[in-house]
Length: 529
Image 1 (spheres, rainbow, N blue to C red):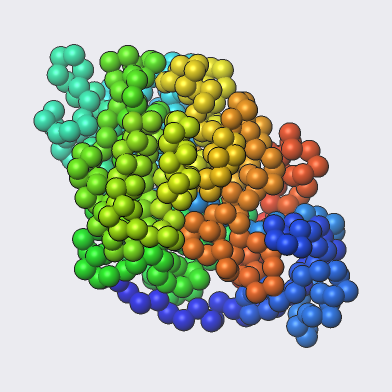
Image 2 (image 1 turned 180 degrees about the vertical axis):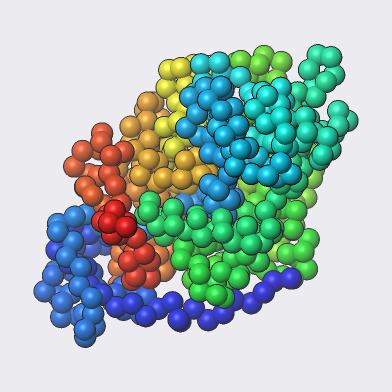
């Protein structure tokens, strides 16, 4: 059941001016010195003198000290609550070897009772010298007295120990449960079996709420003021409760999972629906898997697994059925498609649905789009399909000796994630992180310093994909994404100007984050605490 959202006016009470800055508006005014906010919105931009004249009486005043201000980052692809939940478990993202990851899991086991799960997340074997997936035997040694699971960073592959296999239970007959040459379960699961494991360890609503609060604090510290979340169905009531209790401090555009399509059709929720704090967005559909897990659907085999071309999550008939129903009902399509074969299936389904039920302003999206051909890109332009991509993937896995080279070989790796090619082909490009890692500044740096010319963007192009154009893909360009009068007062103060030295963007830090005119993060205050 959908719960109506409360009136958001109580969020709009903070009045202030921010002056003596270099404010990059991404709107017609380009750069201004100051901005005034009232009732949660921007009421004036321009010179210091002009803004002081427009300032509400008795308002707070912030001297920016000449620092750069940009619109608040909009992360167009997250798993926001899950990120917060994962942050409360064993963080394996910094592990430099399989042994180190297992030592972390062992340390995590010592902190909890024997009847609790040890949950780790964020590992990637591509950064380890041993370079292999975690198995049940590894986890049996690290966590002999606990049920244990370690989720790979991509979310498409996980590893469990013997106790977990027995408790869930997992069997050799289940799809996506890996077996060795003798038929024994390896403890490695992919795609649908990952969902089974996730369900077995799913947090309570209270645990999800704690995860949301953790995620909001992290977002503030990184300058993220809005997220577009591809969450689980159980996440929506948590968001509604957070809004109704005044706890939601990051704006959320929630894409509902495809498993809830029929319920959504019965209720009749189009795209978008909601308030400035929480909107119901599109329908998230998985077309294929991931390159890291070797489950993305490719037309040619993986270079490091010659017998494997990956696979489609749903049959093409099932995919076309979901796409057609959603498009006819006025629901935006948000389709995960990574490999060229997956992209082809997604594009064909969208094109067919638009031919049956034409829509001028559908803003359908393909998520990730890591290995498109020029033909795919041209078809996206003709059908006005948005490319929703992750520049941080390039930062993590591109270049010589990177995971892309291992999985795809040199030729395909050089043409994957072609951000520049997509923009030059006049396809709308938006950026998100997929929480791998959740850091828009890292994403900006990765796009600007990408190793291949087809990927490399200017600072302004990359910034627009994380702000102005990301607002477009959630149908919110009239209220956010730029710094202009009448827009929501969501913006970020940076430690340094990214336009001065694009080669060193990665070192830039967020000094202040402002949401609805209120300073929700102040780096200096955080240091003092």
